[in-house]
Structure formats: structure tokens, C-alpha cells
Length: 253
Image (cartoon, rainbow, N blue to C red; front, side, top):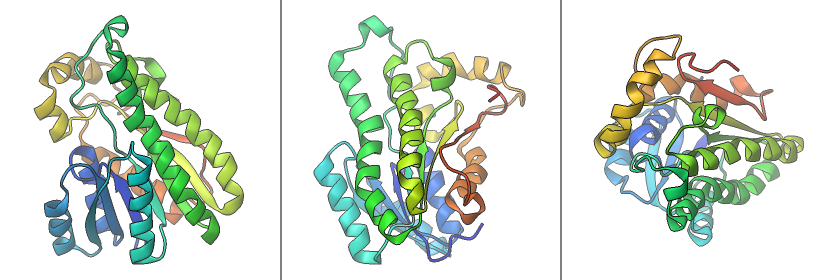
């Protein structure tokens, strides 16, 4: 699945699962613009050195519309187009489990601003560029938790459930312009940021996740690469509005 000469934006692409997405697309030949509030300069340089594609880091807070517009304008100005958008930026790895009635309203709004509004804003500003060219691949990163619920994570689960609904609507609106929109929903994935940043959640969820999977092992970011490359490539040209769940068979769709 070659992505040669394709230009991509990966939000939250500087660390964790996002860094794996960025690396996979550079390896497939794409020019990857890592839009992240975290520093991605070192990663971009490392990926570019390995090739065959290239990577650049552009600092951006996805919950800030002005910052999102600046990111999109920078990419279009530098490369003339955007072929692929992967909406990965999200608050999760540092969220401690907390009962729904104990969630601070400010935190609730912040999680939705980054996870949901951030996804919407990127689609809002990237979509018209893709539509004007009659081609584009948008992959919104959801979560298997939106299909089964997850105690103590109501804010995160709600944000990911809304992303699935947003994907279905955008697929209808952008389909006539040759733009596909799909959701990639990972299961509980042991990224480096999650393991380092939230050992309490890892300890609570790791065992039950493995026990309820058809494939009884831990899930790692590399397990998502094949599904991502399929959704952003021409191999999925007639696939849109769908949710692709990658969780080792924990949930059956």
C-alpha cells in the first residue's frame, strides 16, 4: 500500500500510538505533517532520515480553531494539497478512572474539546481542500470503549462515541466529492505513553482485556498499522462511513 507523493496530517502524531501512525506512513512513502502540541521535531527528523517518505512537525492545539486553521494553511501552503487526515489527538493516557458523578465539569469539557471538537475542527478545515480536489482520506480514531462502555471513563467514552457518529455524517456529506471518512477503533492498546503515564489504568484494564479477546495477548500500537494503511490508501477507495475495530476479537461487529 504505497503512499508515495501523498501528503498527510497526523494529529497527536508525536508520541504514543500517533507516533506509530506517523512512522508507518513515512515508511509507506508519504509526507507526514505531525500536528501536535507536544514536541515532534526529533521524531520528524528521525523518520525523515529513515525514509522513504518525510516528516515535519507543526505545533498545534487541535482544540483551538485558529491553531487548526494555521496548521492546515501551513500544510497547503508548503505542499499544495492534503491527501490524508488522521485525527488521532486525544486525551486518554493521563486520565485517571473516576465515577461519572465525580468528573469535574471543566475536565469533561476539556476532554470533549480535544477529542471531539479537535476532530471536528480538522475535518472542517481540511475537508474543503480535499473536496475541491475530488479526493481524500479521513480517518478518525475512535475506541472500542464506545461500543461496550468503560466504567470510570465516561468523558473519554462519550467523546469517542460521538466521533463514530460524526464520521457517519461526514461520510454522507463528503462522499459526493470523492472523500472517504472512516473510523479506526483500537482496543486497549499498550502504548508507551499509556504505560508510563497511567499505570493505574493499565493495571485495572490489562487483564480483563486479554481475557475477553479471541486472541489472548496484549495489544500494541503496531497491531493497528495494517488497518490504518488500508484506510488511508487506494485499497479502501470504496469504503466510507465505516468503523473498523481492531481489538483482537474482544467485540464482534
